[in-house]
Length: 134
Image 1 (cartoon, rainbow, N blue to C red):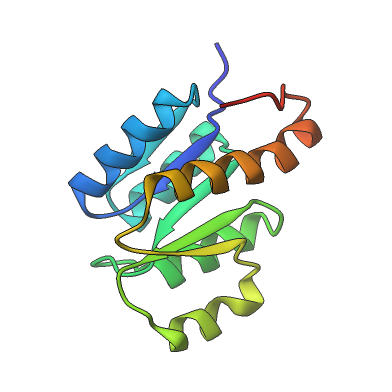
Image 2 (spheres, rainbow, N blue to C red):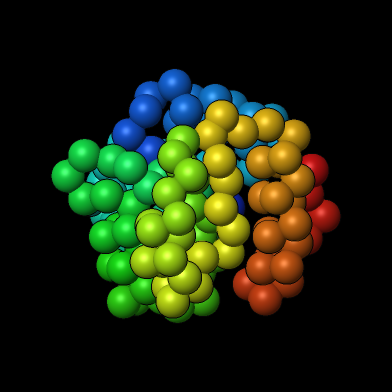
């Protein structure tokens, strides 16, 4: 069995992780979630996702630090940054790190589903996977 997943969620809020896991699993996607940046980086190496949904504000290793580590190993992996704060400074800090999209919390689940489908439809043919999802 392959360890590949479609989406890896990295967010310290259990409710957000659960909501996204359920919504994306209902779309037929393989989804895993981590509760911290450090845990997310460990899972990233093991599950090789096609997309990462990453929270900006987390205790310990925050989203910017996590994104920097992701980019040290893979500049092409799509990463969507999520934040409850309209933090322009953080957006500026991450601009050079090739963020695919920013999502403001609270987010609309239909918007998240559409964004994920769009990113994966662009990414999956490159990985040799079926692009007909959702």
